[in-house]
Length: 394
View 1 (spheres, one colour):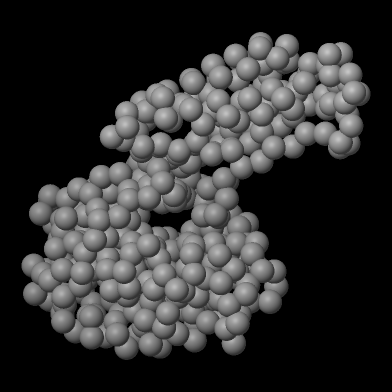
View 2 (cartoon, helix red, strand yellow):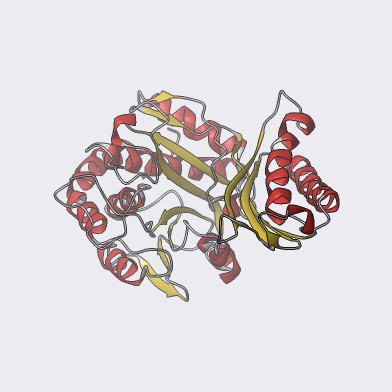
């Protein structure tokens, strides 16, 4: 790695191995005391206390934590998400959560790994570029913590030239990393359709305008948007997750509500799906003599990895003897908001599939996951510093 000679690269990774072991207890503490989105205050206080005193620390409104190490100049930021999910844990771990919430997405590992990286670089000054930690709330909900971080203006205030995120991913082999250039996560929009008709007794359907029947037709028809409007060499997803209508088996309800999600890795395709959903909704309502209201809420944008950052991070991970794989997913992450505003890259870190899927009540990363995530974070920081130096931004 072509970093400034003053920074001990070999010593940094040797030190990181020690610090990753030192924060295992912190990781278990965070896992045992999860806080759901919007309630991360205790978690943030713990993390700020665990950061070295050499960091400049600031807590912003909404449980946003910022820590900076190094002098003035363009910095590299590492993002660590803090929130847990409202999932009842069923891992059987001795340090399992018992408060009805759970770190079923690896955020406890991400947070502890960041602390390990922070302690490592604090012991090896001077740094190639300043390091900024973004301790982010509310990754798991629509009211995105990443979007709120951007709204604070902190990226500009901290002169952030690149943002790096790391996420555990059971779909990758245990010792494999992925930092694929280009789009790696999809947009995540949601829609809600409310169809209103004329209620009637179930024995007299001819007196009704059947909102539930219209909703059923909509569900079937919207599945054909992808199969008949999207280039078969590409992909998209339209999924209906809920249908609510009626309260009695012998009554035709007045109203039916359908909710679902839209996933795409192309903005033109995203717009097309929105248009076709509206056309399908209006057509179905007309055919069934019903009224319709469709609301589409845009969520996370496409998460697009900066090509130069991704290639350099991959090169450095491979130089360390790690395996690289190509990974893209129609899942979403609000890290995409950073990627839409700055040079950014998400690194996916493999873990045993037997440890459980993301968001499952049995999700339990293996004992080496923390070290692998910390390695990805430190490599992402060093590689980004190198890229910024080449571009003259460092």
